[in-house]
Image: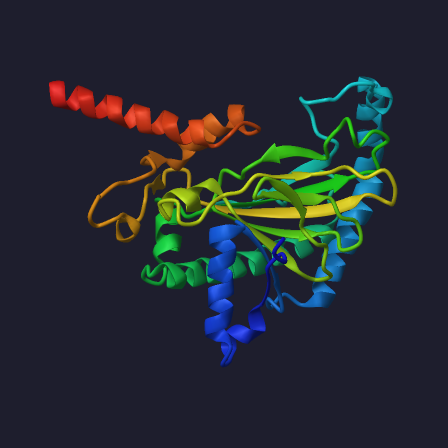
Length: 317
């Protein structure tokens, strides 16, 4: 099995740039995931984000989660649970409008730190999108422009904790799925593992690394690249021991009214065949909401069929 791709972004500024860009391209084509280090976000600041996130869980979320577990009898299940996940979560929205000031139970320091962290991640996401453009032969800024819509991208963070689970063979931390959106930036616990991706029919661990950011590609980048890059199934395995696993997944997604379709430059010039449909991002999200834990292909087919039906109506009008 090949080694999980780790990208040292400092080397993009030197003579090894070509090799690093090729490594990023290979990761996008064959893994759908990679991990970045020396990405420009200060390690000391990341330590603060981690400390405050774990303190917030202990103070505000832990008893709520234990109450949910007790009310559903999850600590005594005897058969596999396939309709919920062993996770405690809340969501922060950054763009187009932040909701951080409205989320209850966050202390002032945590709010300010998460605002700053979001700004750093936004810059990193847009830098990575431009690196993908370079590898794909697209003009700089193409992906950001496609994502923009009329009001800018959607960007938010899912803050998760995965507490120790008494029955990890019966309850997943998070069931297998692909991500619906654009590019995902994950700051995960460096002491407790659990994230896995599906590669060549086998589940592969995403290695916890201190101060790294894990990058994965969502369904929208698969569509825009006409299948050259792929979104990949991944899951979180619950753990029995330890203090639980922290996960901050930030989703840099197209704007709600952004129109998503394969980049013309990436459509085969001879066959002129779009392998993927054209749709409005918000319509895709509405479909995804009910089908998240199912295969992505039927979602794409649903829009292909809808587009074909619309063309038939136009032709017969």
